[in-house]
Image (cartoon, rainbow, N blue to C red; front, side, top):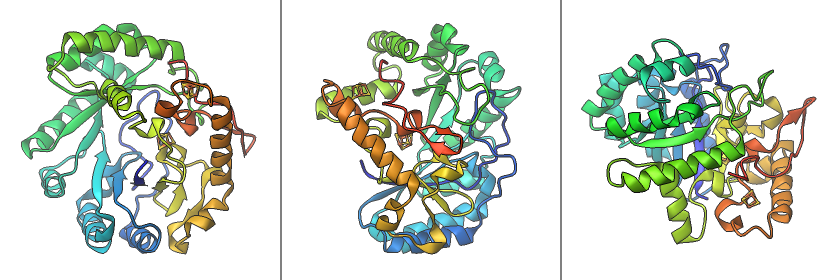
Length: 336
Ligand code: SF4
Ligand code: SF4
């Protein structure tokens, strides 16, 4: 697993998707001082190639001036990390100015669309589709590579054929994402899909992919194929992210991944204190995740897929209960 730093400029978002568990309407927008602190923290932290992903909430809320300075600072001051960049955005706030800047740094864009307009807007909110497509056109005009994550929920999985055909007909690459039970919601399972359903969805898409090879890319299936050839997992959920991935929130707090941001129990430190790896390892959060890794090694030791999976995503397995982390077995998507 490569060194990965996620920068979360805001946990707010102009959209209001029904199944989203990540938004904080009161979140501030990161100021450039936090990027300076992050740069100072990383200067003495680790010396190996790093990927910086801007994530959210909606990262474009930080605006052009923030990105111009943040990209310059990270590229110049941390050149020894050979930084590569990526961004995950709904594209609503994309402008020609931003797209030109991202093109300068060859930043691949991950965006989100769940399928045809009516289905997408039912899950994500009225007007979402048009706003994302508008940003997509701007990104394409500047030569940016855009891939779409399609979140399959308990609703859209019943219309999987329509979703697949939408991506196929529009020549859009696709990555699927099963809606997760939220660690933050009162009804965590409302939109989530179960492991068995997700496994069947993967099989359906594999059949379609074989039929339509060279017409579309389905990244999850590509990743499984690549894993089989390389004999190891090639995405974070099938590799060891613990101690290799870090997320910095708008206040400079450091978490194990963007998925945990906002859950104070998972804060490992703050960039302004320039914590060393040893200091981060003293945090309850990292101790719990290492404990989870130990449990996975025991429970999954005999599994023939272990080297491709490593127990999956710890977010799916370590919920907070009564203000404490509870280790809840291996990833609930195991069966898939
Ligand atoms: S917590 Fe899950 S989503 Fe985050 S880096 Fe780890 S495996 Fe990936
Ligand atoms: S989570 Fe499931 S598939 Fe993955 S290694 Fe463990 S037992 Fe195997």
